[in-house]
Image (cartoon, rainbow, N blue to C red; front, side):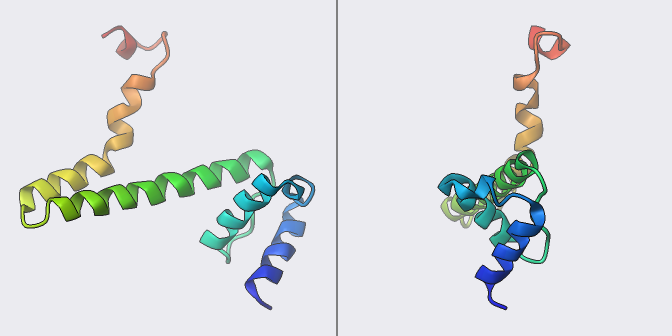
Length: 107
């Protein structure tokens, strides 16, 4: 069975066929499937979006780190710092996304 047939079978099994009739959701489902063809597709649209955005976030982080390390080649301390910043980026910006009830937002 080829990859396209596997994708269509997974799409039917996940019960996302109706949602995937729109080109955007079909593309999202295809990207999610292509990243991990051995895993089942999510059963809900929400879970599909969640996996898709995780994929985008991860691939962007890898690209950012690769680009930054290329620019800093030959400067080991700078390369190490760049890697640590990329890996900690979510924790570093989390306080900025805190709601008004959070003590962090009052700082």
